[in-house]
Length: 88
Picture 1 (cartoon, rainbow, N blue to C red):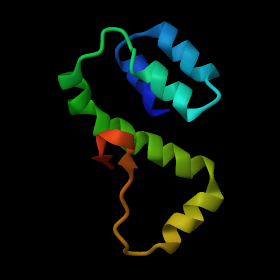
Picture 2 (cartoon, rainbow, N blue to C red):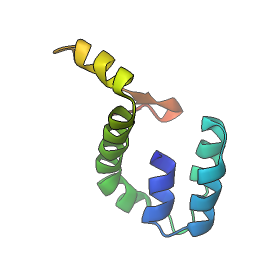
Picture 3 (cartoon, one colour):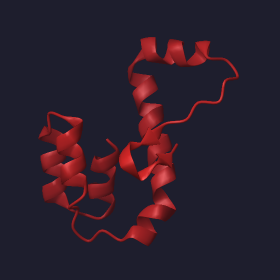
C-alpha cells in the first residue's frame, strides 16, 4: 500500500495499476522506485502520514493482528524499512 499511495500521490496511474496487480513486496518496491513525477522533498513531507494511514488500514482489516498489537502494551515498536533504514 505504501508504494501505491506514492504512485497515487504523484499521479502515476500506470504505476498504481501495476502495484494493484503486484504479487510480491519485491515487485512493489521495484515499481515504487520508478514512480513518475516523483519529488523526494514532497514525498519526505507526506510519507510519514502515508505510512500511518497504511498501518491503520492494516490493523483495521486484520483483527488478529490488531489484538497482537494491543497485547504489546506500552512497548515502543518501530519498523525499519529495508536498506534505507527509515523507521516508522
